[in-house]
Image 1 (spheres, rainbow, N blue to C red):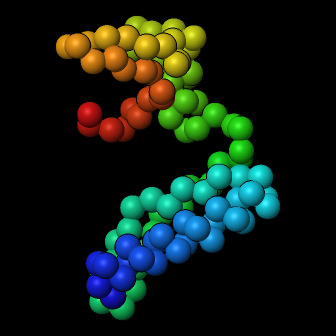
Image 2 (tube, rainbow, N blue to C red):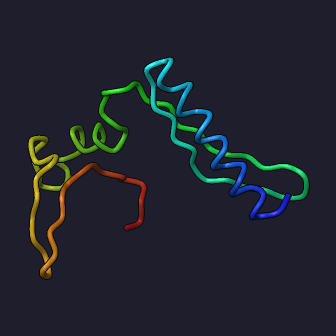
Length: 95
């Protein structure tokens, strides 16, 4: 499989999962893909519609570790002339 074929396949998978998600009341997120030769593997996250995301849940639990309050989720702040919003926490992320 070639990279452009996989991109097309990914788009079609996301479209098909959109309809299934509406039917089942869940949200699907197609993640990273690894491929080689004649196969590819996609990561797939499934979340109940309306439920907090994994990053939001992580923030609520771990906020105090970073000197924040769980209520700070969604707060906006300015830094270096740009406005940012706290939308979650990825503790395993390097950035």
